[in-house]
Length: 351
Image 1 (tube, rainbow, N blue to C red):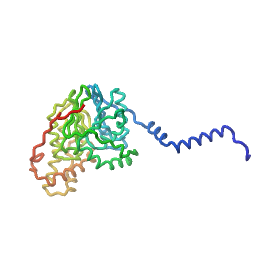
Image 2: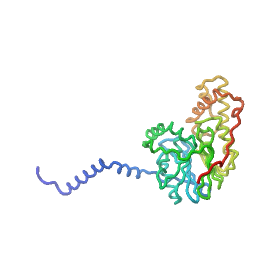
Image 3: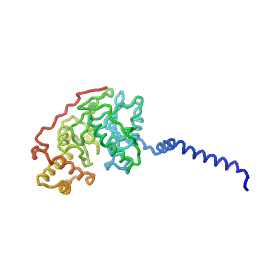
Image 4: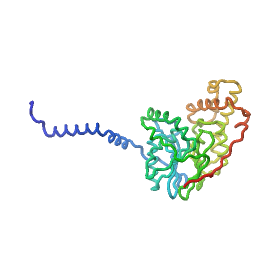
């Protein structure tokens, strides 16, 4: 049969297959974009906890592929002029899902993206908000950038290794507005007061307070049900709790766990845990226990109902021991002999 022409139908089939192969070689970005679009996460579920204040509750789990990195509480506040986003979630996909939810909720533009601290579960979704006309301003504590820069490569490696998501350094978004102490943001008939805190949960904690509804986004200065995770200063965190309790709050959004109207009682369990960790770690040091012995012996009080204790308790004891080992203050004082610094709200503003 050599030399016989191929049937027209077969020629068309071969030509179509060749064209598909060429497109796959020449236009891989098109295929990649279509795959990403097909696998895009649906808009996030949010609850309007107060008029114009929307919150998404993350899973009470560790940051992992099994939950898509959606473990932090994130949200947004709508003014008459624009929208402020408060944290963007643990992956670019979570950030995009949040953006989609905002666009379905309001036609107003996002003018601010506020990062409460530089932990990956709260800010790796920033890139989803980096485009716009004009793009929003990113806001964080003045110490946020240095902390993120020191950890950026670890976050990107973890995102690639654990989630199979590639993010370049250029896609890690840093703040354009740095909050030294406090700052007021005007969303139009709605003022948000941002407060930067001395080292507590981290060295770059920031809270957001909506004056109209007396709603406080405490972020990871408050954990509910999820065991508190120490990445800053234990004594500083105890001080921050005492100061936070003085605020006039009707609704509080923790960094992890359910929204609460029971203020400030909702902070009592965390307060008790952190002061207990402080007391037990000091006692271990006074007994000349090594750090490993302290880690092995200091556990969770019986009767407590904290989640993720196996993931965070030993790390908390390690951090507490390292902080308290060389302290000069009176070890009988719950926070040392120095008075806790008081915070002054509303000392700056921007439109």
